Image (cartoon, rainbow, N blue to C red):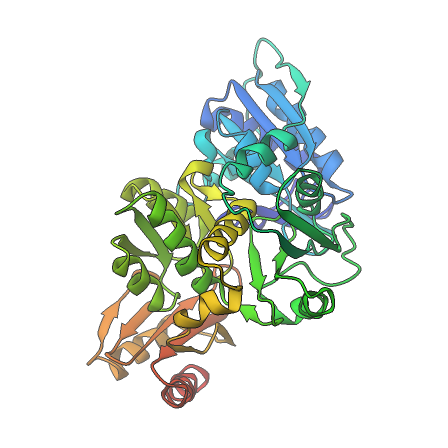
Length: 442
């Protein structure tokens, strides 16, 4: 049986079969059924070779506890969130951008609500590792479904642009390529120019993690070569995306949050929009200037999805490229993110670089990781050194001044402190960045 370290803050993740195997997958199915009181569940998996045996074992465990299971086979996380929204549980068998031999699971309750360490995942871990279950009197049924076309149709309801547009989509050989190949078959003004859309769990071209900007080089070059209107990069399970403008330049995800907010607020005046605390000040400034309510929140999909529900929010964006939509069960949907951006460009008659130019008001360091031994002590030292600023401990330490701010927060999985800093000038940003890093790195 596996150890408890495969159960993370937001999901299950570990090497197959050393850490995550059929035995623990079956036990996770039984534990999930017990904890959530499931009668019906939906299961899908990404393109990893271990996805089939793990999902089969998971389904078997659910059925052992009397759960009727709908299996949808190969599926992106957004497709599973959509298709599983009316089930007691929806489970994605995926390790996102992690290379083999890793695999994992993202477990959701009804309404695609993520089950993380704060609301049940550790209880599932304890039940699964203890292996103490009362077998149901009746074994659950199983059926197959193929909801991808329905998911594409649902997502297309948000596309209002009519101007022809050419988009290079880099799937990174992850599972999201299947959604975009299906979209390419539809009659829309959108021409999909494919780049690495074939699913291949060896990730032969680059790691499907657009947060590492070096993985975007091929996409940048292809946008320029094809003279495309923009580029879109997906991560391994397609719940994150990054945009490239027509000049081949990377647009940071917080600027995309601000851009999408303008389309959301045009449809729903006064809407509440959330942004993670690493995002540029231009995000809340844009939301408020358009009459919306801006709410800052902590990092992480499980926290943001809960906050969206608690705050009555309509949309949220993260610096890491997660975009969440109320109409998509408060979950990620990269198709909706793309369509919202296209709506804005069509309405304004602008290119992506033109539309984002007014949002480039501040200068950001980006996220900088430093390996440390005692992150809490360093954050306390920074709090003391910058005690004249406005401090918040919502997620790590954030201190704000009139013309600059910084946030340092510990990684959930590694011995790192992550720094993001923004200022009104490049000179001030670099000066403050070096100043803060000197404290962090000693």
